Length: 429
Image 1: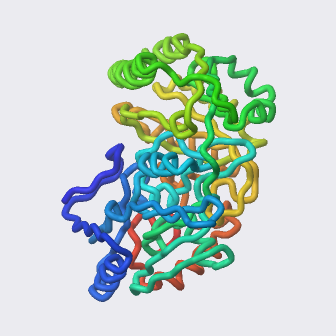
Image 2: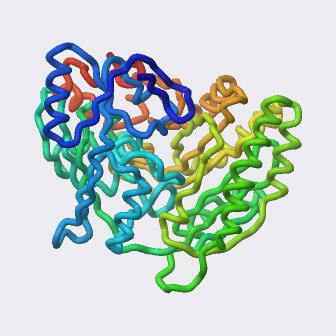
Image 3: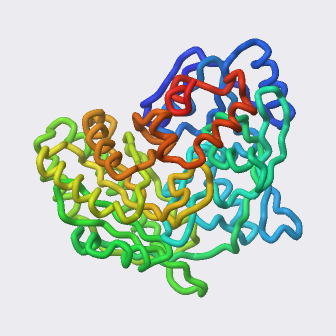
């Protein structure tokens, strides 16, 4: 079969795919592949833009491992099949009066892939998805099944594993009681936001903003956790109009025009920024966090020390002003508190994530090269699921626990069954 990711930035033909229904089947599959010298990659929903999941010989798809079980007297902990789609997990948790404490802005990834690549979300006092993990079942290429827990080296490495240690078949997660968010969205001057980024981050439980290149406007989003039942969700007609028709269909047209007429892009972006409206609504957390994304794009994203985000954005603005680069997508800026996950972008430092997107028709190599150069100047750590060119030597300088991770990898997969050319670049041969 042909495998490709969502954006079609990575693909391969002639791949055999297994769909095991139990951890024991994963164990047998990996053991047989190892004995025959075949390389295996676990694949999810394909929402990584990088080639991290690209199979070489065989692929293992965990879609049939998707159960959810609340642990009795577990303080809200749940055991979840690693192949579940995040949207289905959110619905299952809501039915039990539970929720994940933080989410990214889409819910079509599978849990294992979202964890393996460091999916995060935003919140100045919060952490990414991996910080909610309290246990993992990992099957190593020799067929051994490992139940891991905090303090175990395999656990520490496997919370964000890149699929390089073993195949994660089950995840234990710490959840919180279901909560609602009051969303406040609207345009603000970019300079006003940059004048005091810390105040912006502190102004909501979950704060983020988008900036269209060639404009001076930020589209801000502030999501506040609310305890009462007040507030209303967006009416269905308004959600359909603003998010589906304008946010996706009309925006697809804007991007196609921009790809055909690059010189028009600054004017198109000013038009897009001028149409930004204000809206306030309240809904269940997952309904506010996650949005439909049907316009196909490529993406590069870096995690910067929070103190570096303002000068980095000013450098990016100067580059766009100087080059008039034809980028129709806004840059996205999100924030997380420092965490202790070994390969997290926010490990050990309060962090701002800056993401650069480009429509798949627009050509992104030159834009991302310039973006990466600016991010590198501020010790940016690349997002594992996004496009980047950083190699193992530089990653070892950026991640304090990089060598610890490699030591666990050596124990788990000394024959490099779970590898591909991308992993050889970012982790070493």
